[in-house]
Length: 236
Ligand SMILES: [Zn+2]
Image (cartoon, rainbow, N blue to C red; front, side, top):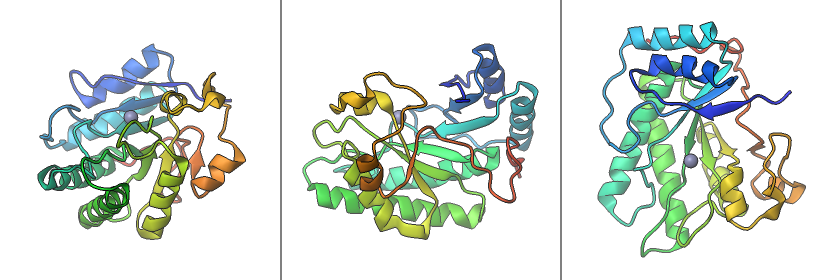
C-alpha cells in the first residue's frame, strides 16, 4: 500500500508539522527545517526536537523528511555561494540528525559560465565536504541525501539520469546517497512516461541502470539497524 504524503508548513514551530500532516490525511510529510529563503539557521532546541518526535507518533506520521533550502547551489558560478551552500548543507544535515529525519532532499544545482563537467565536480566536492563536516558533530546519524531529479533546464544539473548516476558513482560509499524521483520535474524534462504520476510507477530499467540502481520510487523509509521503524531518533 503506497503511503500518501505532502510538504507541510512549519509555521509556529517544527513540532506543529506532524499535526498538519495528519489533518491532510498524510502518512508521510516533507518539511523545511527552517526558512527556505534565508541562509540563517536558528539552532534547534532539544525540547522542540523531542516534541516533534512525539508528535510524529501521536499523529501517526510514519516518516518525515526534509527538503533543503532553495538558496543553495553547490555548483554556482560564485565561489562565495558555493562555500555558503556547502556550509549550509553541513548545518542542514546536522539539523536532520537532531530531528531524526532519515532523508534530506537536495537539488543538485545549476552552473553559470563554467562547464557541465566542472559543475559535476563542484557538486561532488560540496556534498562530500558537507558530509565530512557534519559527521564530526553527529557521526553515524546523518540523513541519506537524496538528489532530486530536475527538469534539466539550461544549466540545471539532474535533468538526465546519467548525471545523477555519475554523481552517485563518484561519491561512492563516502556518504549515504539516493535519488528523489520528482515526477513533475521529470515530466517537464520531456519524459511522457511520467504523464500520470503514480507512487506505483517506477522508473524504467534503463533509467534505473543509468542512475546506478539508486532509484527509490518515493523516499521509502528503510530503518537502519539502530533506528526502529517509524520512530525518529530523539534530539541530543
Ligand atoms: Zn525540490
